[in-house]
Image 1: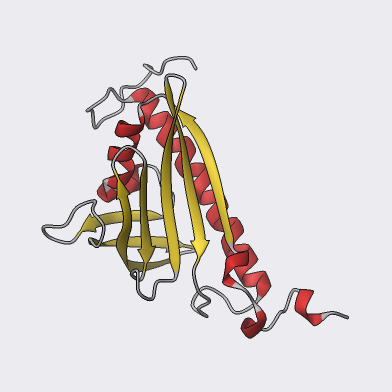
Image 2: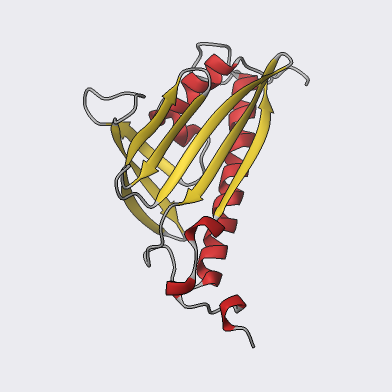
Length: 181
């Protein structure tokens, strides 16, 4: 039996690059508006089923090198993360690394591509290095990736719905005002 391919792989033989994905959705907004929404980290709790209370450090904002903190929750557990912005291209791309650019553990990124009268927004998750806090076996890390994939799909659908129900510049959805696609 090839133990390298088994469910119980040893942590040391796993490759972090195996644990990544990208999901996308079309939203009815210009790339600049989508970028403004996703780069405002304090807003992520509107759409994400797992993140809340996200705030940039005092005086920081969506620019490369900026740090922010956020609370995450999964399976009844809560923890706080520190993340650093590694890409900030208004209207095009926003990315950050949990744990910081130098020794981070996961990179999250958003890209915006104009499509018709809206934007195809992509959200990606990439494990940058192995850390036992995330799991010690291939099964653990596959389960984490699958969980995060579902979270991203929920986030993208919620973002699209929020955009459809919220006028540009607005902060509160207007119920029943979504335009048909």
